[in-house]
Length: 462
Image (cartoon, rainbow, N blue to C red; front, side, top):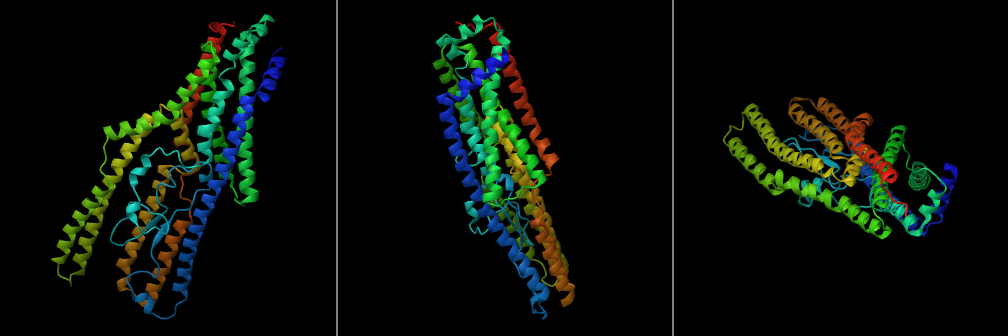
């Protein structure tokens, strides 16, 4: 009997205009997001490859020079920088990759505390507070899943019970002495298969398009991350599917169910995440970016005045003051960054009341596009800057050949940092995403149990 019920539910689902229409719209925009995000990634990778190639060319130029004039300068023959390797899975979830920079410019005097875009010259165009923005106008696969696939999940389930009760179908089903558990399980399985099929086809098409049409090769770790991303996406969709099915069991009218669920969907996707950010900014206010610039200028001016009073021939004391200045400026910048990170941590905590926020945070960690992944990159920028600073201190007392060797080794070490992956290891990414995944899982289990209990005990069949 259960098999017959399941076949009937699947047949109705496949011939349902609402499902076919929402699936068609979702698939169309899924393909659009896939094309846009892939082109964006390829553009970023092209910029990255060009920048790294320029560094490699500079190293070869330095290595092959035979005269000593090149090595009499304080600095290497290229503008020192560390470049962030684009995350290939940003195609699926761009995260904060388009909000924070991907080039850490090195300076022997100052410690960099933010990155800028490759080829960007106007640093005023960058605003670090953008890490808190809940921007929905960036097209990627996660955005389509978050918006349209979740809406499709709502549409699939809102009249599974209430609609059949209105049409008298539910009464006919139970006239055959079928248990309520079998009925609700068959309906749940049919909707689950529809969601599973839609999402699986979307992800499969994405992999085929990127691998064969755009020649983007995914490694073994990338495939695992995509699998986890698929699982998280499914858990997220189940929240709205279960919520819609539960509401269909509770209310008598399918019209009431769709209106109520649409309001819940709107609140979860647009109001709660931004509300969490707003409240976090009130609880933990952070100074504006210009304030940090002003504080840095004040610290620098104090040390500039101090260095002007020094004896120019006392280079040891001059270098000591400059090192002290560097640490003081870094402390001001780090305090500014820490205030933003504290604010963000509060925003994350408050926003987790929204399934959409839970999904966003988990997807960012899984795809390697989170704030923590950017922190890994900036820590490597600081390491490269320390090497650059060490070079400027050592090179003065070296012979031409020794200076040449030091330049080459420094440039190679800094370039190797650009070539490394700048995301967290797989297990660390999963562990970071695990709390958000756990909350989604618990929420789904609660909703599923509520559906069974309410349908079995309280849902009228007429």
